[in-house]
Image 1 (cartoon, rainbow, N blue to C red):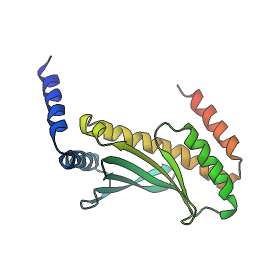
Image 2 (image 1 turned 90 degrees about the horizontal axis):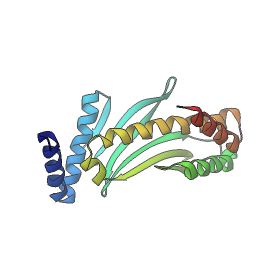
Image 3 (image 1 turned 120 degrees about the vertical axis):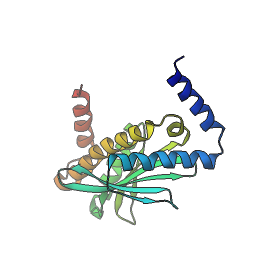
Length: 178
């Protein structure tokens, strides 16, 4: 075993031996460092253990992404659709159900009273605690999936395309990717 592997192994053992609160603080520090080193424009809220960052999800369209540590979990969330037309509520639920049947990681949530659609992921803190790169990987997975979900809901609203057609096209496009 090389010295680097041994150091990595001992670091994991040390992190596992800490209390849940200290484990959360380590992941919080790692998450803040990731945002600061990447020089993303982020709002960091220490008390809530929340980071807000804006990313572009399509040409010229920025959305606020939320990264939160809470109750032993690492959450990623973004509103992919705001103020949807109430006459499309049924189709929005159908499209969300299609996504929720396909997604391995995350859930599309509809808030009827607020009139928005949100995409959320959640992961136990243990994974980013032991594998530091996982925080970034989850962010990128959440971001890339958000772009697909946004595109699908935008197509539903703008083009009034049927949810089944939208999902079929998305699956077809993804199957053609290398």
